[in-house]
Image 1 (cartoon, rainbow, N blue to C red):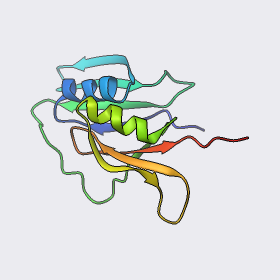
Image 2 (cartoon, rainbow, N blue to C red):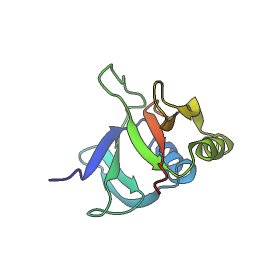
Image 3 (cartoon, rainbow, N blue to C red):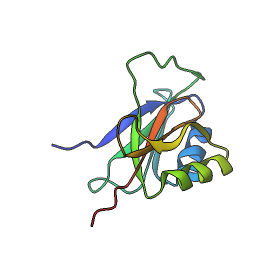
Length: 130
């Protein structure tokens, strides 16, 4: 078994696609419009299945905002340098909610950013192994 994709409901599909592709550097993989069912799907990611998991962005016609609830945590993305990633995300108009730095009680460097729908995304700096 393996994870294929994670689905996020979004209030503005074009805004979300722009964030994930231009701010986080993902690729637009495919888009499906289902007017009879009143939704549109867009899949984004750093590569296609089966080599990479994808994000499914779901826009339900007429729904501009969702309550995130208290169960959702975050999506984690590995980055080469969390400090540089935060700077690039800020310069592209993204929101950094926790600056890069070591995790409390540890040495792993992490940061958090927020997408346009307020979903949290953790950036985890790749560990250098010798």
